[in-house]
Length: 363
Image (cartoon, rainbow, N blue to C red; front, side):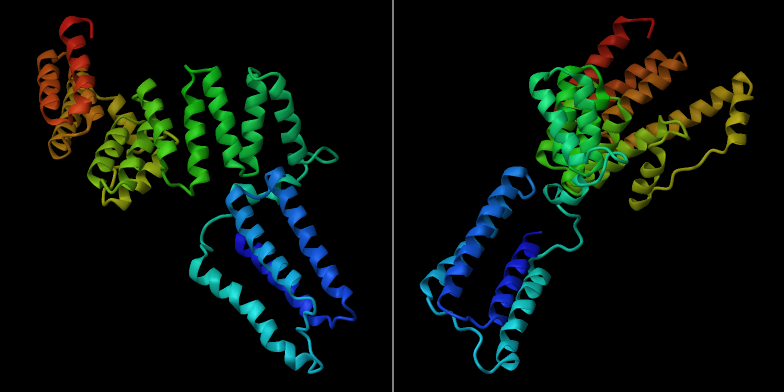
């Protein structure tokens, strides 16, 4: 977006070049024009329509032109040569910013949230306020009532609707503060932060993910994004292990299965699909056949863990499956093996589960 501002500034200069000065007053008028631009830029910065970094860059460009104008009392860019004399300048004005954008710009990225000003002008409903007006009203209300959960919910979802992910993330963080036992707020805060970063797991997003996983280690969204964090860090093996474990314990019709399949397919893993008829067939199995079927699944999970031994959740799932079959000794053996293979930071989780299995016979 900074390039758009620079292009506008350069086009303004082109228009000034196309006008032949009538008197010394032309230089004074152009100085006032640049000063007005500085005032407008500062107003946009205060309203949040442009972020600090881009505002500073645009301000430097305007001040540079203003200084040059003030030093030149008779800026005779247009001469009696007419259109032909202005052509090189006009081409320069058009080609320089275009070349800069090709070299330095990122046209593949979406606009920054701070520049979604047009969305703020959309009406919330016919005849109603704009999103920008509604957001300001909600924010003013929350300054006086910072514990109003309904207000933060409306602010978060309204900001997300116009792709102001920064404001949405902050609002979801407030909801997480007010309802710390409700994991959905952390999930939505994390997703807003991913929106801010074009899907990339930033350090701040990792902190939110860590908090979510600490509070809800088995949350499917947390597991999915933990796999994404591993994947973006270049650790495809751990990403694969996390995602496969999540797929193993998820219902076939779970809403996260479609994106999960896409992620795994990108890693060369193809998940088997179970049709409704097959699920019905499993339900209709005899006890012996069902136990044999579950045993096959346990064996498959155990083999996968041997290939990806760092999957803490996978070891816990294996132990739970063996407990469901009444095989406590195998569950204990699986946890002990997992403890010997996972990273040091993950050992306490498995040790705590192992202690529960040993001391609580009802598990």
